Length: 222
Ligand SMILES: [Zn+2]
Image (cartoon, rainbow, N blue to C red; front, side, top):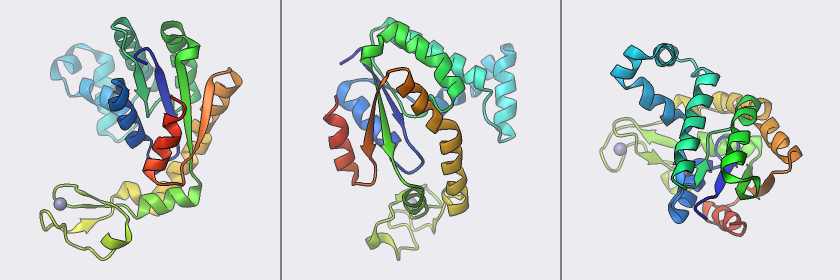
């Protein structure tokens, strides 16, 4: 199991980060979070000073723009090589999110881990359910405690732990989620079609069931 690569592809709200984390813990795999890879680099002042690429990535990040795609791919490929060299398996929940990433990362993964050891899980979720799940999620203002969208929390206005007001993140507003779902269909869904066309083992999981059941369905294939 250690030389396995697992890739989660899913629209916002399908819980792919949670599932990836559970699988990584269960099998001792490394969970690669793409945004973390970039953030670690731009928060290293030495690196920003001596590497113009890192400085440029930091400038964009501070402007609220995306990291440059070739730079992110380079960081991911570096990470893949590092983990492969120590025989460690990987779980991805944020990449490949575009065809560009898929075309540049998959050959590397295939070369180092073997196609037969790569599994893709597509967690299916409708646009309506994606919006419902995301927009019912709230957090507290002070400590960012997550308040799930369950009926028993619906009337809660003050955080039970620190007494601060409960708010909806901008990222979780319905119009923003609709846009994120559209970006998923336009940029990330083609990655799944690309992988299927290239004979990767891609399994569809029904995302509109409780987290535990989703987890069970994934486990049947591992
Ligand atoms: Zn709180």
